[in-house]
Structure formats: structure tokens, C-alpha cells
Image (cartoon, rainbow, N blue to C red; front, side, top):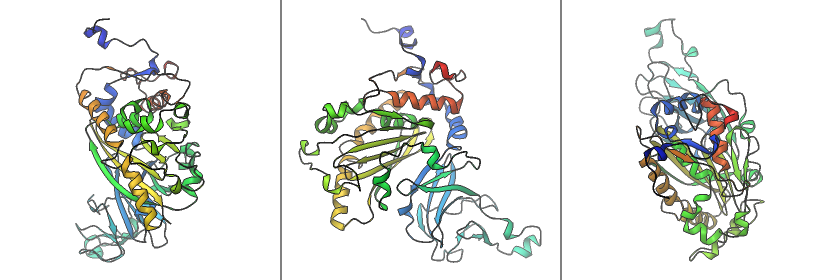
Amino acid sequence: MPARNHKQWTSPPSLKAGEWVDSRIYSDPDIFEEEQEKIFKKVWIPVCHESELPEPYDFRTVSIAREPIIVVRGPDNEVRAFLNVCPHRGMMIERRPSGSFAPAQPSGNPKHMTCMFHAWQFDMKGNCAYISREEEGYQDRIKKEDQGLRRLRCEVKFGGFIWVTLNDQVETTVEEWADGAFDCIREAIDTEPLQVFHYHKAIIGCNYKLWHDTNSEFYHDYMHYHNRVTGFNDEYFARKNIAFGNGHVNVNSFEVKYDQYEGFESRAELSFPTFPPNQWYMIDMFPGMNFNLRGSALRCDVMTPLGPDKVMIEFRGLGLKSDSAEDRQHRIEHHNSIWGPFGRNLHEDLIGVAGQGATMQTGSEPRRILHGRHEDNFIHDEVGMRHFYAEWGKWMDRMPSDPMKKYMAAAE
């Protein structure tokens, strides 16, 4: 069969509509902006972990759909989230990525969030505690009691992750939103408190959904030499992709043979509580957060889409808070040898999506991206992507295989 001409190259594949998507969903700026409004401003997002705010008055700043957010731990030990925006002139209150409000800042008092622009101050519950020259400037027209921060829905769930939504009318709790996807690792991550021991981030020149796709399918394990050496056996190919409500998927476990890779060792001694030795479960959450419990470490990816062709990914490695110094060092070595910035697998995944991003720039010719592998939901079945894009179509009211048409569930 000769190479295809242009008409053949751009014609629909001989698959059902739900088994492929149009590449414009990865590159069209209008679709990207619509995703921010229709999806990211509506759903629960795990923004950080409670161990990153260990003490009262600690904070962490993040963003969802370009909205700046601050997460704080109050003196009552409760974690709360607010828009990181002063109600006076719309100034960003805190610019540091993390820190503590316990000591005084140059423009404010201790134990308060202070806007450096005009020295308005807020407590850890978001109440406005002080307006500079309040009576002189506003007389009785504006009072600090009416100028609190914009509070956000916030829950601590599933191993201590802090989930935030911009949607006051969100219809589900985090528990309901997950729909059971975490049940496979829940006892392992909830029995003891966890702690972040590794953090790095990467800004990649690709659409956020391409990173999701890589986390959602294991057919690309052919790219990973480590996975082929330590895992390609009957047990590996017997793993199942299991779909849950709201677009989530998890992949069940098998025993990774780490000692088959030169220089590696078994990770059995540092398994999480109740977790079988050297096992590997993965949970992929719509619209693109990923949790990997692999051997001795939990890895979490949180994506922040920056544009149709750019995404920031924050990678966290977690172990048990109760770890000894020696055990913690082993966990770090185990985690970083696979998932660190120079680990055995992670850089290969990033090369893969960067290569896709290079071919799907804004304005590039629409092409067909195939998700049509069926293997009875076993590991190389692309059911996770089909499930994700059916959910994406509902939120966006667009057909993934023809995004200029309205979504039709029967066609997907």
C-alpha cells in the first residue's frame, strides 16, 4: 500500500466516532478558552497536599483557570481556600509560592494576610481585619466587616490532598466526584498521614490533554525500556482498565519485578500500609490529574493548562509521615529513579507529548488521533481515552471527532 495522498490522510478513519478525535481539540484557542470556563472552573481540582501547610498560618498559592488562589491553615488547624485577590483594587495579595503568615510582613501585622498595595489585612478565615484609614477615607460607606475575601469550596480528601473548586454550586462532594476510583488504594493512603518528599514542575509545549492521554493508556509502555524489562509478562497483560463515573479511570495492579533491571532492587519493605509488595495501581482523574501508587512511593501529577499548546505539570512524590530518615531516603531514591526529572520513565513520557505538541500547533491541519484499540479492557485497550473524551464531549457540548458539531452521546 503506497503512502496516502492529502485526501486519504485527512479522511475519517474506518473506526467508530468515539474511537478517534479531531486534533483541533488540542490546538484550537477557542476550544481551550471554552475548556477553562466549562470544565476547569466547574470541577474539583487537587491543588496541593496538606503536608505542604504543616503549621498554623502556613500557606500555598496556586491557580485554577487563571484565577489566583491561596490555601491557608488557620489557628484552628482547618485548611481553607480563597481567591488570592484583594477586594479593594483587585491586587494579588500574596506573590510567594508558599510560606507563613505567622511573622509580620513589612506592610502588615503578624498572623494576617496583608495586601502590600494599601495595607488592607485579612485573617485566616478570610475576614477583613483592618482597612488603613478606614473612617477617614470611607466614613461609614464601606466597613471592614463587609470586605472579606472570596471563599472557595475546599476539602481535604484521599491521602491528605487539598481539593478546591471555583464552583459555589458544585453538585458533588469530592467523595462523590471520585465515584469510587480511589477505592483500590484508599486504605493504603488513608491509614497513616502522608508527606510530600519530592516536588518539581515542568512547563511542556503541548496541550494538557496529551499529557492526560499518556497517563491514561499503557500501550506506550513500548517506549519505556524499564517497564518492558520489569513488567512485560502474563500478569502485566492481565491488568484491567476500569471506568468510573465523571470520566475517571483506574488501572489495577500487578507485581513489578524491579530486580530484573540492573541496579534496581525490590521495594517490598517500604510498601504502604496494607499494600501488597511491589504493586502498582494508577488512578486517572478527569480532567487530567493522575495518582500513581508504585511500590514504595505515591506520585501525583497536577496539570495547569497555560494555553492550547502549553501546560504546567506539578509532580509530587509522597511517603509516610512516620518514615525514619533512612526509610525516607530510600523512598526518595525509589521515586526519583522512576518519576524524578531524570528518572527512568518520566523524561520518556515528556519527550512523547512534546513530540505530539510540535505537530499540533494552533492553525495546524486537522488530523485524526486514534483511540481505537480494543483488548477487552486489558492494559493496552484505549478505553481510558474513549471514556475521557466521552465525558469531555458532554461538558463541552462538542463532538471530539468533529468539535464544530454538538455532542451526541449515541455517536460516541
